[in-house]
Length: 510
Image (cartoon, rainbow, N blue to C red; front, side, top):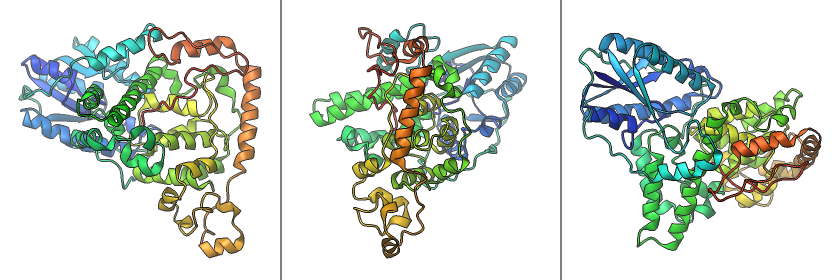
């Protein structure tokens, strides 16, 4: 009897429930990964995602071979892969993790379940981390999450039964990605790199975490940088949680380290909190969280504004440096993620969907369950959160006062002194020639005026169009909970904001 372990966003051996269960059966095991060409044609996938996955797959195959097995790669659809394996090997069981993804993977998983049922193959799914499928009551989620995080981690199986002799060697085949986005400084994939990041973070880099993650100059080293490894499952979130807790609780740990790791673990909680939103309401990939806000922006987007934002040519230095850094490295810290999405939503008045897709393609750590609720939260579409209309000049002076980050990514402004680099549009013609900044574009618009107009337009829309019934629905389904004793936030009445989540920086962006 043959068992197939289907790898998806869980590219590791450690703390892998399906793999451990298959190993315990002492029967032939096929470790399967399917390269799905349709997935790589989506608007929120890109080449940089595949490159990270490919490196992780090569390492996974090496680790499996060390244990007497190997990774079998199939190019095509998952049902076709299973049908081929069934003809060759007569599979009886399919083990895998649950996945909270977009509509495409959701429909794929339904098709796989249907194939298993029609062919008499037993399908067993394990939860990946703290997301609860078919959660009956949001008030119970925190309890489920803590139970799962404190459960024993599973060690990698020391050996794995070989696949049937009828299974041929698989051939490596690259997918054709619709969106080719070269990323010269992308983080490498694989569990080995994830573990090295974790070790260095817990030993030293975590010190001062809560104070150093906002500035782009310190966040690069002070954030854990584990987010792509969590997104593709090369590390276990539960293992990460427990090791960080052990490091913080150790008798030799300094109070400063304890505080930093406590704050870090709170981000792991928020990580699952946001994915739970998409699990509970998959429509968030395409429609506003607060359905009354779906038609807030009904006019067509200005294509020039969208393009200049995408290319880092808005004329606001911090926005442009951030977009260029993201294109080059595949990563930026949370504060900058929030800021560029807010600027696209408010000052540029763009509908959230196209900026969301562009950012998804650029984030190496793209996680649909975090991404879609977060871009809507930063775009003011939840109806239960305070509007965060970032002032790009104020943020620039606060986060990069000496222009270090700006000069790194905006060579046109490298000659400007600290006191001028944040507002280059105020330079005279003679100053532009003196400092060589003529090539840098003028701002798309007056950001302060645009922010006031956006705030006024949204305020009026909320007063006239938002209903308490829909606000109550959003709070009930997606509002934060701090534990079973916390009372529910009050619903929105006219333009009043409930306190729930209003000041949380809740994207795990490390």
